[in-house]
Image (cartoon, rainbow, N blue to C red):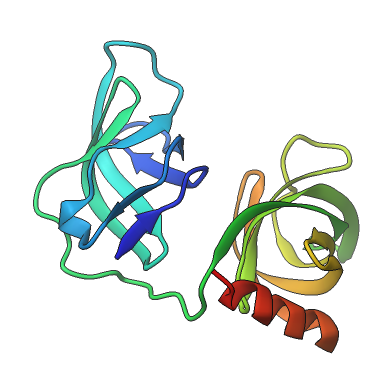
Length: 195
């Protein structure tokens, strides 16, 4: 089963343009990637606009790239679908909105510096998380974040973790856990396995 959760950010790369960040408005599922229905999205375009490009599709099964058309708020896969996912997730993800504050460590010249960040964690797993946040003095996260110490409000209480950056784009940061309190680790494992 391939599921694209509501609230996910998908990137559409059209020739000769900046990539478009599109937010999914509803969860979409199918047994196979080739059977995914059109995805309702929130994007920058008005009525009557039509765009074609390569879609970076992030789902519960992993990440893949496919041709897609964006037309009047609907993203439709086109062409031949890929036969597999290029990245499999090693742990089940739990989407949600969990308030987070912390400190980001930047790798900048001439040395490292620290910046306060705040925002929300939008999905968690036993291996990592997706953070949407801003810095204290900016609407985006500063570039070059190496690791982040986060305090996250989870259903069982505050969770503290150090996260190593895997991917960073504007106000989003995906990372893997570098350190976590053993009690939080056990609580997170139970939380992610509960459905």
